[in-house]
Image (tube, one colour):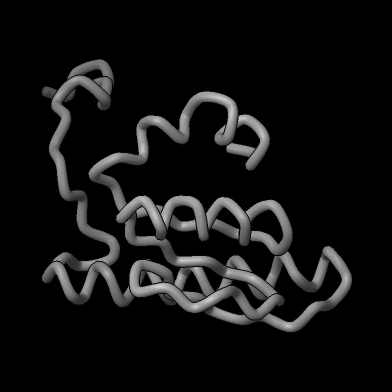
Length: 109
């Protein structure tokens, strides 16, 4: 969700959550607001954010948008892999089984 949309409503749902933000200016401001409110935040940015106990950041180079998108995607995939490993979940394993998402084909039950 865009930062503007998040600031105008969904920020209220952050209580008790952990938040990942991607961006520089508004996102760094939002990260500070959430961190000061006691919400753990991971900020993926090309800037150096203010230090706060609830704020961790990963710095990416300030490069053109297409390159930046690739760097952010690879970084977030690495973070997702580390989180899965920490939780003891295989990265390709489903955490929740939902029996209503598959349709059986004719003659197969």
